[in-house]
Length: 236
Length: 236
DNA sequence: GTCTATAGTGGGATAGAC
DNA sequence: GTCTATCCCACTATAGAC
Image 1: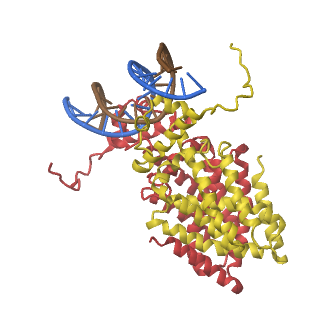
Image 2 (image 1 turned 90 degrees about the horizontal axis):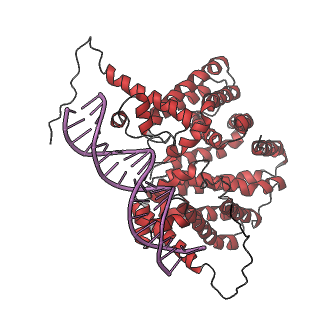
Image 3 (image 1 turned 90 degrees about the vertical axis):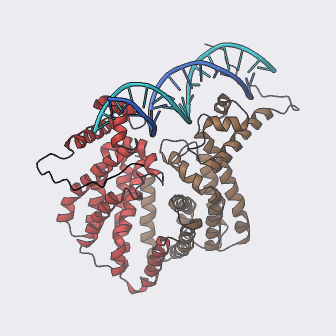
C-alpha cells in the first residue's frame, strides 16, 4: 500500500507543463499514421513505428496502450477536419438539402485519402466491445462532436419541420452518416463514386420525407416511426 | 517448375474417396467451433484447436487457410438452420408482414445462442477484404441462399405490389436483415430485446410502405428510389 | 514523469521433411 | 496428409538512466 496524493493544482505559471511528453506523443502518432498510409495498417509493425520515430518500442507503448489505440488519434483528427470542411456550407447555405449534401460530401472528402487504410483497420472499429467502436463510451466525445455538426445542419436550415422530429433528426442524420461511411468502406468503385451517387440520390429523398413530415395526414405514420425509435432506444 | 496434371476423373467406384481427409477436416472444424463457444474466438488458439483435435498445427492449416476461415463453416451451418427455422412460417403464412416478421425472428432465434461469440469474431467479418465479409465472393453461396429466403417471403405472399419493386425487394429485405444483424451484434440489452422490438416495429412500417408502392401518386417517388438503387449498384 | 535497452512470452502462420 | 521446427510480430517485463 502506497500513499497517494491527489494531484495538487500546479501553480507554477511559467513552466511549459508536459511539453516534452506531448511532443513525443504527437511524433509517434504522426509517424504511425504516415506509415499506415504508406504501407497499410497490418503491414506496419510497432517496431517500425518506433524505429522511424526514433524512440524505443516501450516508449510507444507508454503513450498508446496498443496498436489499435493509435487509431483513436486518427478519429479525432478526422472529426476536426470534417467540421472544418463543413464550415463553408454551414455558414453559406440555408436550404436543408444543400446543407446536408454539403456536409456529407465534406465528410467523404476528408476521408478520401485514407480509403484503403480505413478498410484495413475498419475491422478493429467494428468490434462492439472495442473502445474504437463509434458507439463506445470512449468514442463519445468524437461522436457528440459529429452529431453536433448534424444538429447545425438542421438548426441553421430554413426547413420547417415537425418539432419532435426536429429533436430526433440530428442523431438520425448522424446514424445515416455512419451508414454512408460503412457503404464507403465497402465501396471499391473508382474514387468511390458510388458513395457520391448514394449521397446525391439519398439527400433529395430525405429532404422530401422531412418536408412531408408536416402534413397532418402523415402524422400517425411519423408518430409510429418516432415511437419505434423510442422503444428501440430503451435499454431493457 | 513441376509438372501438374489436372485431376483425372476418378473412376474407382467402390473406394470411399477422400473419406479420411474429409473426416479430419470435419473433426478440426467441430473442435474449433466448440472451443470458440466455450472460450471465445480470440481466446482460442490454433495450437489449442490442434491439440484438442489431436492433430498438428500445420495440419489444421492444411485444411483451413487461416483461423478466420474456420468461421465460414459456422456461417454455412447457421444459414441452413435459418432456412429450417423459417420453413413453418413460409409454408403456413400468406400475409407479407407475418411472413417477414416470422423469418426475421427465426433468424434471431437461430443466432441467439451465439451472441457473445458473434460479437467477438464480428470484427473479422466486418473487414471488406475478408472472405468472411457477407459481401465477399467467398460468401456468395451463403448470401444467395439467404436472399432466396427473402425471395420466398415475397413470392409466397398475398401482397400485391409494383412489379419492379417486387424484383428488387428480396435483395432489399436481405440488406435489411443484415442491418438487423448488425444491430443485434451491438445489442446488449437482456436477451437482445431491443432487436426484437426493432423487428416488431419496423415490419409494419415496411408493410405499409410496400403497400403504398402501388398508389399512382407515389409512382414518381418509387421510381426515384429504384433509380437510386440502380445508380448505386453500378460499379463505375 | 519520460525514456531506453534488452530479453522474453505467446500466438498466427509457414517450410520442408516424411 | 501429416508432422516438427521455425519465423515474425504484438505485446510485456524489467531494470535502470535522466
